[in-house]
Length: 271
Image (cartoon, rainbow, N blue to C red; front, top):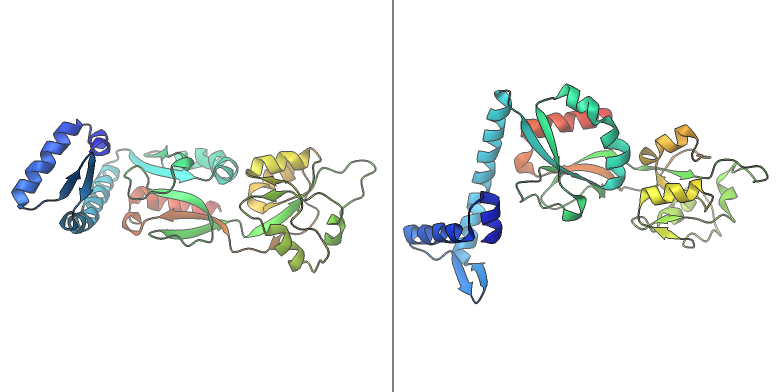
């Protein structure tokens, strides 16, 4: 009741009164009130499941009218930090120039991917591309590259994949089997692929590599700038070793939102 009141800009008492009036009008009990909990009854559960698509359809129709009338449309978006900071945010100036009437509202990544919430319309996630209740468009990330510190005097160059032997391997916690798969793809044996520090952020791995801590293995799309500027070097060709990648996800019910369609088309074209 409190969360509903907050979203509707009402008091919890006003929401509770509306619920009681609805129950009286329908002649059924929608909620069970047990101690301090309010739980849906089986009838209430069935009712809300039929109402939700109608409410979403009404929201989509309203947003479409706003955009057709030239008013600003708002698109709620969440993104994993690595993709956001390296592949999305640096290019949003272009999106704003192309679509000045679309306002992107950023939902913190730590809140998860609850598409039942009105504040979230789409999200950029990292994974296999299959999530319940969501459509997913592949953006990037299947190709990974080895990154190494810039060449230094007296340091043997990395000329072939076998040259990684003896180097410290840095791991991203979301891809614990990355080095194992990379070695298998390059026909290498005898490499301690599970040894080495595990870090939880792409930026941390890049900084550690640039500082001479070891070698990193990351999706090519998130390290292109550092490679181009020479902050790190990429001694080998990119390798496709994983089905995981970055995907734009959105619920089917919102796929036809004009603002989402514009953002989706722009992002897919850029990637």
